[in-house]
Structures are given as structure tokens and as C-alpha cells.
Image 1 (cartoon, rainbow, N blue to C red):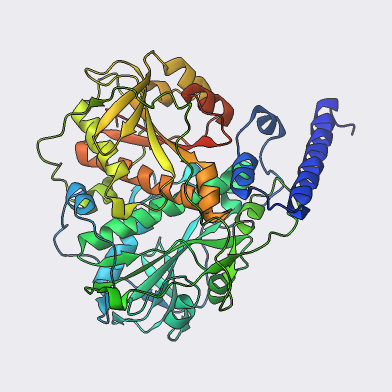
Image 2: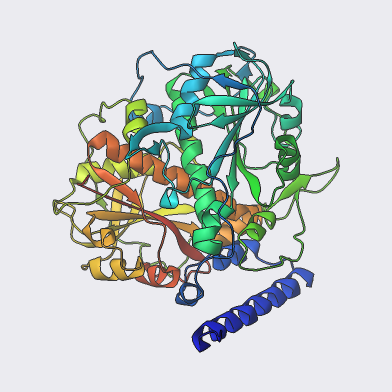
Amino acid sequence: MVRPVWTDRRRFLGLVGSGLAGLLWRASASGERQPDWTLAIHRGTRNTPWRALRGGRGALRAPDRFKPYPGAPRHRLPAWEADPGPSLGEVVRGYAPAGAFAPEPLSLPVLARLLSLSNGVTGRRSEHPLRAAPSAGALYAGEVYVVAERVEGLPAGLYYYAVEDHALVELRRGTFGTEVRAAVEAGLENAAVTVLLSNVFDRYAVRYGPRGYRYCVVDSGHIGENLRLAAAGLGLSDHSPLRFDDDRLHALLGIDGRKEAVCALHAIGKPRPVGPESAPRVRWLAPLVPEPPGDPEDPRIYHRASKLMGATPGDSPPPGKGPLSPPSPTDPSQGATAGALPRRRGAPAVPLADAIEKRRSAERFVDEPLAPADLAFALEMAAAHPSLERAPDVELLVVAHRVASLAPGLYRYQSQRSALAPLRQQDLRARLRRACMGQAKAASAAAAILMVGDLVAASRRAGARGYRDLLLEAGAMGQRIYLAAESLGIAARNLAAFWDDSLNDLVGIDGRRRAVIHLTLLGPGD
């Protein structure tokens, strides 16, 4: 059977484009100057009309939704019966990072509660399980593993969290904390458990192609933020270093680092005051020189490009530790008069745990204005306590459609003043909808909160690893917006599918130095 001419042409052009991209990648990697991997990864995962014509990764076989581990022992986790705890506002405003961990155990119900609130099943809709953290297309690429050292009623060992059964699958018994600590820059001594967050990349790639890589790491930001906040709500400390030796952790979990790879880790335990004399020792991890990528349309290459490996004593710090780049002098918000947002009279009293369990992505937004005080609370939670910041290179812009007493338009959020600096005052609903691939919710929501990453600053600070940092930070911000909306009784929804160039053009940035990496819609709805 003769194939349609358009199909053959599209396949031919796709092969040509992939070949050219591979040659450019190889040329940049072989030159004297190391390539700007942060920009390369971002541009390699853009949505463009060209990619839309080529379609997704239809040749891939969709992986299983869950990892079965047949025959492995299972430990059923207990239900939580204590009070729900403090509110989101109380946890975020009072958050303090882990100074050190006391060598005390966690109870099994506490660990069960943390896992359930991180990415567990929190409800069902038509027999479809709903989860504590959002996922693109409900495909759930994220997996959760636990290295348990001191948990009452649970043997020390390595476990996989089976979310549908709310159980821990025992992979190996033993004490593996030393192996985890050897893989990170800062010591995690005395942590009761370490939670490793991985992604099975093809769960997203089969539908979204290279764009799925962004969704995977953003998801780890969502899940990790639930975990951090839940731990703080229970009076525990969380330490989540961004720098770790990827392959050491992959070897520990028995995964290949390609089809499935670790994207984040969180050590949790009872807090202990720490003085300067007992601050954790920091060691450098060296960036891995990326190998030629193979297929530039394969999202798994982007994670490998940002890997780190253990450095030998006496090595120099890795590149990318220089000063952050200053704000762009052409940024139209510089010097703009900002209007202060009204502060709510007291934060919403909804317990954080309830907000996590009831959080859902909005099915629809209604034609009602958003109260400025509600927008102020959501933005405060998104910007959050400085101790919650994962990467310093993400700022918040707001596209306001229907916010009471606020003219429609584009604004820059100034967190220190809780104020909005106007960049452009006009009705942007039609343009935002077009930039978001025609999705009606982009125009029907009261406001869109955009996370803009400084790609140059992230690259100077952490090389290719900086792009992971940006995505994790955006995911954490988006999750706090979700939880703020649930606490306020309004609705939120991530909208990560957008035409990158169109959305960057809408907000007046070039997409190379600074770019929109994520956005969350907000407003009255359900």
C-alpha cells in the first residue's frame, strides 16, 4: 500500500530535523566552550507547531501504570486517626529548614501519613483513582521509594510505595542510609527515612514526546512539596538537597537512569537544633560530560545531560557557581509603580492535610471575579517562606482577567511588598487562550499565574542541573497555589501545554534568557 505523500514528507522532514539537531548537539559538545545545556534542554522540550505536525512518540509502548514487583513482601500501612493539624498558611509562614536530625524513630502511622499526602490515592471518580498531587493527563509518571532506617514496626530497608494498595513493597532489607548519604553533597545523618522520587519517562513521552520531560520534573516538585509541607505540619524536618550522584541512587533502586531516573530526594526525621560547629560537611559533585544524545526527540536524553557524579577529594567546584545574572535592563517592570494587594484578615483555617486530600484540578471556572485578598494569599503561598525556595531563578507574573478592583492585564508580583507592578493593562484573554493551544480554561479563569525562569542565571549557578532546579521550583510553587485555592474554596488548574514562543511573546520575554516554564490558573470554579 502506498503511503500518503504528506505522511512520507512529514516523516522525512522529521528525520532530517532530528539529524541536524544531533549534529548541532555534537558540535557544541565537542567545542572548547561547554554548551549551555539549560537553554538546550528548555528549547528541546518546547511545544511548537512543527512538533504538533510530527505528533507524539506513537512508536513507544506505554509502560505499566504501576510497578508490580510480583512476589515481594508487602507491608500494609495503617490509617491515620489523629487530628488533621495546622493550616497551609501556618505551615508556610512558620517553615524552617532542617538544621539537623535527632536520632529518633518515626512511627509507622506517621510514615504512612506522609506517603499518603505526598502522592497517595485520595479519592475515586468512576473507579479511577485520584491522587494527592496533579499529573499531566492523569498518567502519573512519578514513583516513590523509601529508604527506612528508623521506623517503629518496619524493618530497615528499601521499599517501593504501592499507592493503590497504600502499602510498602519490600525490595531489600538492610541499612542503606550510608549509600544515600554518599550520594549527596550535604550529610543527612540521623534522618529516619529518605524518600526518593523518580519518574518513568515514557509514561509521558508516549503522549507528549520531549515535552513530557518537563512534566516529569514538575510532578516531582508537586509530590515533593506535598511531602515537605506534610512533614512540617507533623513537626518534622525535611532536607531535600538538589545535588546528588544520580548513578549511585539508580544503582541503589535497581533502575537504569534512562527509562526511569531519580529526580528528587527528601530526608525526613525529628528535628534537632544545630550550631555552626555541627553544620553538615559539603562536598562538590562534578557534572557528567554528556554523551551524544542519540535521538533528540527522546526526552530521556535531557535528564542524562544534567547528571552529576561523585567528585574525588581535591576537585575544583563544578562550573556554574558564579554570581547570578542581574535583572534585564530592558525589563518593562523595572521602575513601574506597584499596587499593594490587600491582606486577608487571618489565613484560611482549612487544615493543610484536608487541602491536600481534597485538592482537585478545576473542571471549569465560572464567570465571577476573584477577590484581591484571595489572589494575594495564593501569591504569598506561591512565593512562600524563603526557606522553601528550591531555586532563586523563578519569578511570578500574573495575567489578570477578572480580579476585583484590578484592571485586566499583565503584572509582575513583588513578594517583599505583596504588590503587583503593572506591565501591560489590556484584555489578554484571547491571546492567552491562543498561546495555550486554544484551551478555553485559559480565558475563563480569573487569573493565570506564570512561573518565569531565568535560564542564564540557572545555567551559571548550576550548569545543566539548573534546569531541573527551575522545574522543581515551578512544581513546588504550583502545588502551593493548588493548596491555597483549596484552602480558599476556589479552584486551580495547571496548564503546562502552551506554545512557548507565543506565551513568551505575550509577556514580553525572549525565551532564551528568560522563559515561561509553567503556569497555574486560578479563580472561582469547581
